[in-house]
Image (cartoon, rainbow, N blue to C red; front, side):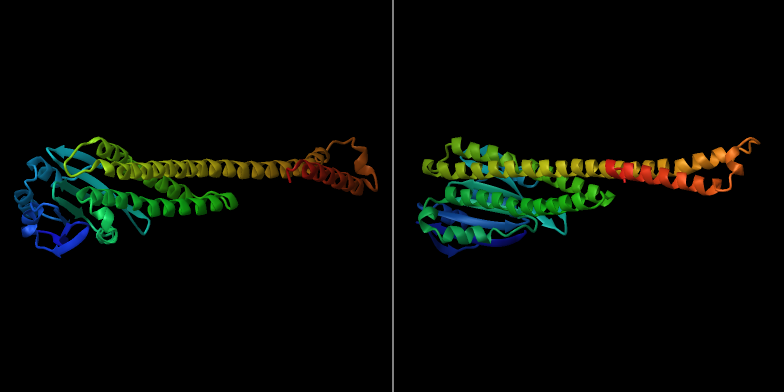
Length: 323
């Protein structure tokens, strides 16, 4: 059946009592009351029980039993079904935990399918703000979506920090294959974050336009606040993605520059070594008529010429930056 994380009834911005989920529909039908049920990894039996209690649409239940590829919002009469994803990063591996939200007149039901950050913090925040909680289901829905959006911030900041460390490493050291692989992996994680956070813009826009009995028009600015946070998150992710791409490009340019410097040094030393090699080659041709060979100081003179020539080439290459 899955684990019941919490189940409580609220009225006038205050928690009335904890309940069993079997009592949910009874409390939800009372004027001025709504129930908030949180489940973890519910099975088909648990969802069927909730369907009978709150008259959930069969297509919403069918959706809740499936794995989705991205967040979405579906309307079924006067009820909403929302799919959200919370990012979880453990030991450098990025995962997304899917959560289903059923919202209707008198109830909010969350079904978390994995071990992400608990929604107990959302419940504590809402209970600490009774004036806003007095709005009912719509404020809880806003708080849940805002919490999901918040979960992306620390993950993106952690990835940003790793990219900056790699950027410093690339600038100070030679580009390594593992650095390129790590940067590519982080860039792929950023794209995955964008893929899951982008639909939240559409969801928040829909909630501002939709007219439901349990959504007060005065709550629309709160959903607009979610949209603003998501938009900023999208901008931050775009910036981090650009930094990752630029880091790879800078790394390649730096490596190309280092290789060019090395090649210039090799060329310079090859030119310096070519000078004595050329002279030695000339005097190694064994011609009969070579006057210098009979000169008493010829050997020392040739060594002097070689020394001066090599020194001159060395100084020239040094001044031009090749050595």
